[in-house]
Image (tube, rainbow, N blue to C red):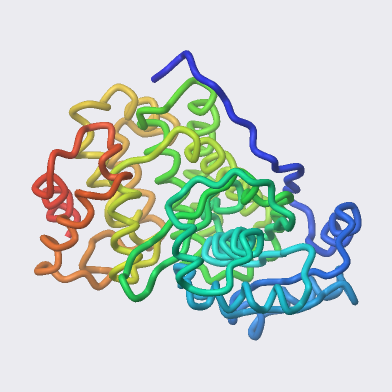
Length: 378
């Protein structure tokens, strides 16, 4: 843990907790001076819930278009189609309503619009590079899961042809405004809400144990983990409790805003491979991999793991996380999410080369280390 560091503030202006999107979205759009708003959401939220009706009520004639073609893992063909749709709509503001795939995908749309992208080759050329140019168009994020995408400056998209998750980076990709509406969270299927929260638990654990950890990040991450441990169990027991959902949304914010600066490790990196190539939901990948990564890392992070376990009112962190996953009724093994035992060596080979896996606090020296984790998780 470093005690000498620089904290880079991101250009995120406002975060609303516990307020209705109907109450604040219209005012925020007015404050930002937008006239033509491009709304991106999932097909489920668009067609099967009242979420977009609330957005329409808030924005009225300022809605220039509603787009529901960004899919899970933000496949880049759908993202590129959104770029063309937003350009055709002459949008001057983006609003993302949904989970991490929607918000991350819309960040890529924002970058592509800023860079005048027309083709897939041009879009791919922007990936895995750090861009710094201020963006002429920004996003308001209305998250309906607990992924934390709404507070980071990195967008993600999947090159479906190669089965590879790509990153798109610019500090101005962080949404300008975030609105955490617990009522919208209640529209999210239980498995998705809870599993995306385990992704947040993953942010807490790996961020706290990361090489870039420092006392400022530590405070938010430990508090977030304690909030998750209590609020998620409450939501499982009483789904209609809005205060439990608000606490989980606060935890998601604290988890991701701090872990995105501190760094992560093997659980995140393996998850990128499981999601990009094998279609495993990111929340589920954290459920099945994180406890085993924590056990594997105990040799070098035991003291700091005990601090995190205390935040969950337990003595062993890996056991505490596994217990929470079990209490929430979520998958606990790789075979529960469709991964076959014979696939493990190929996953290990790919993951062992991933830069996030290579940043693990206990050094990953090769595919055999990753395979050890995967076999324990299978």
